[in-house]
Each structure stands twice: as structure tokens, then as C-alpha cells.
Length: 235
Image (cartoon, rainbow, N blue to C red):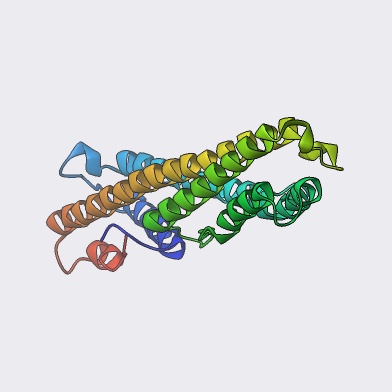
């Protein structure tokens, strides 16, 4: 199998190191091939450990990117969902609640709020879910861009009390929103790529361990103490 839990990854590394410790105490161990030697297997263990660290780092970076996107779209002081009401209120105050301008803006605001969002914050994010979430935030960004176009066309009739919500400020928020959404997909892609490499490396570690066990069985015998010590190690 090429998929496993983090706990299993750690246990397999531990068993691989136990295998090395046992081999070091076997009298005259002679591997069938150079890659089944103690030194080569030790190198493979260290390489595998390195991928564990890399994947952990990539997963953390992805998680931070997701949190940053949430702050920009939903939770931050100037989060898009939080500034929609004052924007709406400004337009209604300038043109009237039943005006075409206010109606158009209210429709776009409703679209932004109604976007189906999945933040994909599980410990093991699934590609399809992350992709769906990316598309949902992309839709929000586009609706927000449409809103900015409408407000820009109002000219001096759109003058919010909070000057950070002027057109220049909204464009900055939009730019940050697009960048944050793209960064989530970017960091997730890196996480998946590195995790796939790690899975493949663990598979190689497992297959190499099997060949080492076969080497020991061939050299010392099926019922030997040496083989009995290592045959139950699951790697």
C-alpha cells in the first residue's frame, strides 16, 4: 500500500532503524546487492525522514495560506464580507434605496455572500474539495471585481465615510484576495507533490526492507536467530 497515516509513517521509520540496528550486530552480513547494504539502507532512511520534514512544512504553509484567505475574505478588519454592508449603505444613501444603482449593487452583494464556500481545513485535504473551494473563492473575487466596476462608474456619487473603502482601497483588497486564493492552490499543489514523493519513497523503503530480509534468510537460514529477529518488522 502507498498511503498511510502520520503515525504509521513514524512507526515504519522506527522499524527501519531497528532493522539497521539488528544488521549491525549480525556476524558477517553480506547483502545480495549493494543497495541492500547497511550504509545504503541507512541513507534511504535519512532521505525518507527528510521527506517527512518537507511534507510537514508544506502542510503548515498550506494551512497558513488557507487562514490568510479566510482573514481577507471573511474575518479580517477589512474582510470582503464585512465591508459589503457599509458599501451597500453608502450607495443607498447616495441614490436611494429603490434606485437602480442600489438595486444593482445589492444584487452583486447577494452573489458575493451567496457563494458556496468550503475552506478545506481538514488534516488531509482532498484535491477535489480544495479545487472546489478555490473556484468558489474565485467566483467571490470576480463578483467583487464587478462591484468595484459599478462603484467606479458612480464617480463622485460613491464617497464612503470610511476612506479605506474608496475605489483605490477596494482595488487593493481585490488584489490581495486574488493573490491569497492563488496562494492556497499553490501551496496545496506543493504539498501534494511532495507527499506523493514521500509515499513513493516509503514504498521503496518497504520493498528494500523486504529484500534485506530475504538476504538475511538466504545467508543465515529460515529458522536462524538473525532472521527471526527481523522478519516481523513492518516497514
